[in-house]
Length: 321
Image (tube, rainbow, N blue to C red; front, side, top):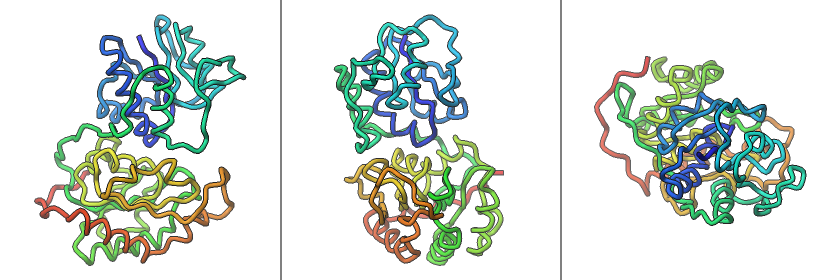
């Protein structure tokens, strides 16, 4: 049995997909258990190949009651806490980055500046497990009753300094609506008021406010069948990468060289005005985000749509309720 740790969020799990697929391919007959937050279960199902999900909301004690795994794989971080979480299960072998504090020396060195996808592919390659860093796709769910062919504006982000100003998102939404886009505003329940503010500033109807009304499976479905996504550097951007949905992504404190979509994909346009220094500037939003203005985003939309023409307008669907 193989136990994999990735106790983080949507984008973190999406960037680990090539590594998870490599483990599944290399060990086709082994049970593959993923330790990750339980709310990510819909995304785990879209990845496929994972036999069991164990709820691990963070770096606490892993609720492990089964037999010792034959192999434990740390796709969470450099250690030592994540290493110790896995060694507590007494695995036959641990695959992880070298960490002296965790007394783990059998692993490659950590590189702070590499892309998150490449990091985990390199870790497995060190142990003789080949991984394809381009294997990022998720299963595409049927659209069902969700609106198809919409343009998604997603203003939220976990940290306030990673959020572009709402009035600028509203200006983008208003312009896109005037040019024929059917705009919806997404987010979690805590971001409903933010989405409402943006929708009202943009002149959108209440039915366009989907923040707090979609679960993770619904959100992935929306992105899979969307015309365009406009968002910051957050989890939904990685869903657009997985489905090759055209996107314009606004990066702030962290370089897209570490978390952005593959640079050879023409369906994604990344905007960034900063140099990553490993720290966090005090401004809200981050200065690299504040330097991006509405014309920058609209010009990026035009570039993407020249390269990836919009499909024919699909039939109207009943918005999620």
